[in-house]
Amino acid sequence: MTTYIVVADAARARIFTRDALKLAEKESMVHAEGRLHEGDLVTDRRGDVHESMSTTSRSAGEEGTATKHENELFAKEVAQRLYDARVSNSMEKLIMVAPPKFLGLLREKLDGPTHKLVIHSLSKDLSKASLADIQSAVSDLR
Image (tube, rainbow, N blue to C red; front, side, top):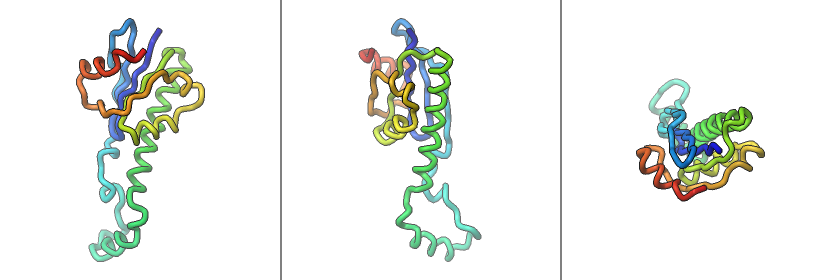
């Protein structure tokens, strides 16, 4: 039985497989835009300092919109990879590990049948952790 373990944050997803309790990294996905700040994702039309200052004050109510959009795009991309694994019959169970906000987005983007394969979720950021640390964190999750 192959269990997939996705360890992700807004900028990186690592997909592992676990057979007979041995963890192996299958794939790594990077979404550089997930590391950018809101101001780096949104630019004004002309680059005029005065224009950008007035735009900033005018759009203060929309703070985080571009960042949220990028996070949703990446969650959708990760969910698509998990969907592909499910329909190719290579994934029988799924464990998801991510910080709370991204974990929620990822759950939201999973299709119904893939969501049913989720056996555990761990609200923790282990995206930069070593293989040994990840194995330790998920070893009791079966």
